Every structure is written in structure tokens, then in C-alpha cells.
Length: 321
Image 1 (cartoon, rainbow, N blue to C red):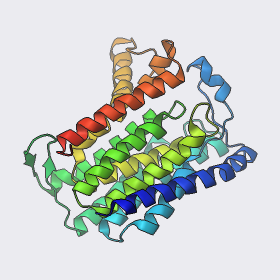
Image 2 (cartoon, rainbow, N blue to C red; image 1 turned 60 degrees about the vertical axis):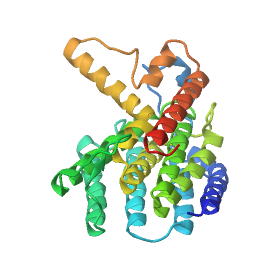
Image 3 (cartoon, rainbow, N blue to C red; image 1 turned 180 degrees about the vertical axis):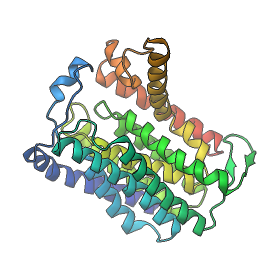
Image 4 (cartoon, one colour; image 1 turned 45 degrees about the horizontal axis):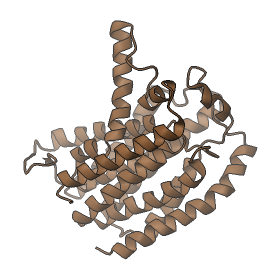
């Protein structure tokens, strides 16, 4: 596989994001697309109210242009495009409704579910048409199991919904998701190269450049937030790459930070509903650390470090090191 092509993809996507962000941020300000901050969250976040959101448009735009330019056009390409743009569109609609129509919850749970099922179903159709393997490998072992399409494709649908929501939960501190996702995409780019899937490798490379370019403006203090437009698009891309490279379960390791964030929310809700008590000061867990006195920078650096360790572990389990 051409490593220079991947480096070129990263560079082009990065430059596109760096060029697009300064053009979009003033536009978002004029349209009053500002972030709404939770009153019960960390007090340090109150000053972020009004910071432009929906900046994920920059990520999606830079990614799409680079991906279209450098990827081969095949079924895998279309699966990855549907995963990223489809779930990114869900995020865009959610952000738009929250801001324009002043509905704090954006899309209703039913609307989100229908749209998620729709794009996941399109992915499944393309995979079936391409004769995609229904076997699932267990990371770090030579064992795999194949229970047929009746199990695999519902699993894919649930996986895409879980991955995108887990990534979405991770967004909430300046630069956190941008950095953690860049690390995960770097690991999956290596996985894709080992699987000789050029489309998946270019997809990962395009996303690395896009999120790093966005990070220039999203690092603390953030000049713009990505919103659900960015976080759901990122989640769609990661889930799509894991599926295309047949490393579905490896996401649990490489994307371990996302998994931890989602579990913290699930445990918090379950504990409060069953015992009337909270496990964390606030969920997702990055807010818990903030409320214990950690600075945003410390939270971000710690989570990035954990992401690097888990990415390395994932590559080791995938026989990548």
C-alpha cells in the first residue's frame, strides 16, 4: 500500500480544515449558532456559552473532499461514505434543530433512532451486495465465529448506534474528542493497511487530517465546537472502518476511551434509577474529573495518553506490532 498516498491525504485534509475553519467561524457567529451550556455542569464551562458550534461541518467537508480525491471507488468506499456522511447528517439535523428552533433536545429519540436505522440498513445492504464476510474475529486470538447474516447484520446496526453514541459522549471538553479520535484513526489506518483495504486506510487518513486541522481551533480555549455534526460523523467513520477491516470487536480496545465514556453514562443512569445514588459527580466521566478539581488541560492530556496506550494495545492484539 502507498504510504505516501496516506500522508498526502492527511496533509490535504488538514490544510482544507485549517482553511475552512476561519471562514466558517465568523459565519456561525453572525448566524448566532452558539453553544448552550448546562447550568449543572462545571462552572468553568459557563464562559463557553455562545461559542460557535456546528464546527463539525469543517471536519465533514475536509474529510469528504480528501476522501473523494484519494480513495478508490468501490463498495467499501460507499459504505464508509454512508457511515460518515449519514451519521454526520443526523448530527447536523440535531444541532440545527437545537439552535434554530431552540429545542434543547434537538431531534426526538424516535427520529434519531429511525435515521440511525436507515443509514445502518443502507450500509448492511451494500455489505451484503459485496459479499462481506459475516465472521467476527476475537482480538488477540486466532478464534472467530460466524453465526450467519441473521446475527451479523443486526449486530452491525447495534454496533453503529453504540459507536456513534459513545464517540458523541466523549465530546465535551476543548480538544478532547479531536485528539482522542485522531489517535484512534491513526491506529485504524495501520489496521487498514495490514488488511490491504485502501478505502478504509484513506478514510482514516482523511479523518486524521480533518480532526487535527479542526483541533487547531478547538484546543483550549476553543474558538469553535464540533457539535453532534462532527462527533456523530467521526463515530460513523470509526465504526465503518472497523466493519470494513473486519475488526469489529477491536474497536472496544482502540476506542476504549469512547467505551469508558459511554459506560460511565450507562452506570450513572442505572445507579440513579435503581439506588437513587450517583456513582460519579457528573457523567460522562470527563466531567467527573473536572468537578474533582482537574483542569481541562489535565483531563485532555490524560485521556489522550490513555487513548495512545489503548491504541498501542489494540495494534498489538491485531498483530500490528
